[in-house]
Image 1: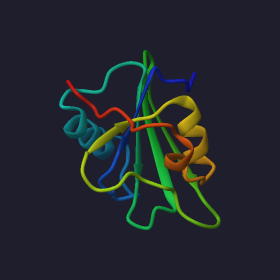
Image 2 (image 1 turned 45 degrees about the vertical axis):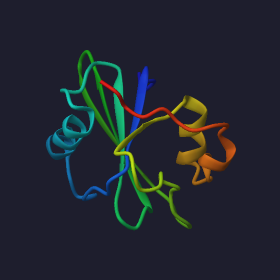
Image 3 (image 1 turned 90 degrees about the vertical axis):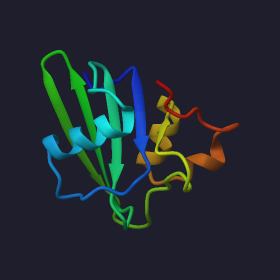
Amino acid sequence: MLNPHSLWLVREPADMRAGIDSLTRLATQAAGHSPREGEAFLFTGKKRTRMKRLMWDRHGVWLCTRRLHQGAFRWPREGDTTWSLTTEQFAWLAAGVDWQRLSAGSLPVWTE
């Protein structure tokens, strides 16, 4: 149900009050195309204490929110706009762990 085949992290901070339509516009800008079935995008605000996951399936759109009680999510450094994550990297990110230190090598950047 919520297992995307592509999981993309949008580096630029988003307004955490934004809903499905606003986040879809941001995802479209980041990806360069309209979001497709099975794709998910991760957004965070400036404080990095909240994260939203926007995902499309054949029936509609999911919008999930995660908030950390302590600490902040580890987001990519400045440079690239959107990053691809593996399932393991997402699990570490969602847990509030510095997933970049646990990942071997650099992450691929969205290219399409």
